[in-house]
Amino acid sequence: MASSTTWTQLLKKVFKPSVRPRLLSAVRKGSRWGFINSKGHWSIPDVFDGAENFSGGLAKVQRGRERGYIDPQGQVIIPFEYEAGWSFSEGLAAVKKNGRWGYIDQQNQLRIPFQYENASWFCERLARVRLNNRWGYIDPNGEAVIPCIYTDARNFSGGLASVQIDGKYGYIDRQGNVVIEPEYDWTHEFNEGLAMVEQAGKWGYINNQGEPVIPCRFLDGWIFAEGLAPVHENGKWGFIGIKGNYLISNEFDWAGRFHNGLAPVLRNDRYGFIDKFGKPAIPFLFDGVPVFSAGFCHGLAAVQRGGKYGFIDRYGRQAISCQFDEVRDFAACW
Image (cartoon, rainbow, N blue to C red; front, top):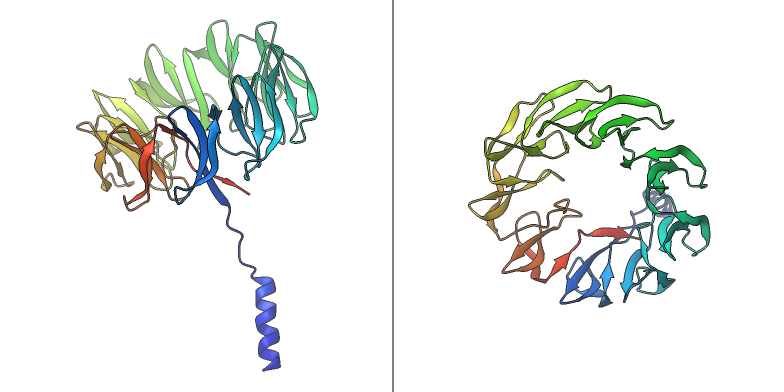
């Protein structure tokens, strides 16, 4: 008996139960924002004029014209003293004060001075900043890694960033070397090894060597996710694979990206979700889905009915009733 108890105790030490994250979504009801949990109950009351989801343990919120940051209990950690700001990444947040942007840490200590005309969050350890109406990149220490010489610039993804040179877009590496020549009218970030690019009003996909993998033939589309990309051709939307062939026929009026095996699609003015075989997984019952939603996050997806937003589970069951005027995807906050 003693040895059995000892063995059980040993197993508990080795196989500790995983700590489940707390899930919260920023939602707007009327003119006020707050945060609900995955049961639809208010975790943080709707007392804010604006809110974004938690990132790095803090969420940006707004009162009047000023922004600050709160913790998952709703306590104000960083006072409402900024004109604008982004969510935390790499332990820093870009914030605007007196017309200039700098970066603070989670203790509200200024880490990178207020000197930029504009600034963004860190991606792959580099952040976009603008000086003298030109964009460049800095590291978390505030060191200029790539000088501010570009008329436009995007975040790094897959080791490359899209920049505008002489009116056209190409891609640079982390040292600022031009890896893909600027020959495109518009570009998106790399995802799953491919980037969506536009030439002469049509969209296609290139690899990280700049080689055309899928010719520019689509009227619209989006980046690859889970091996599939939604594209618009001949008046309808479908999904292609990495070779450019249709894996789900273009039969929809609109299509979003796959996330956790499901994608939102539109047919006959109603939204539903399909699986990777193109089969309806959740019926076409909804009036809308948020345009920039990732779809199912932590088992819940935002949908619209009767002009209000709520959440469904992966079986299409209404998990949180449609009662909100605006919602964000659920995000983990520890």
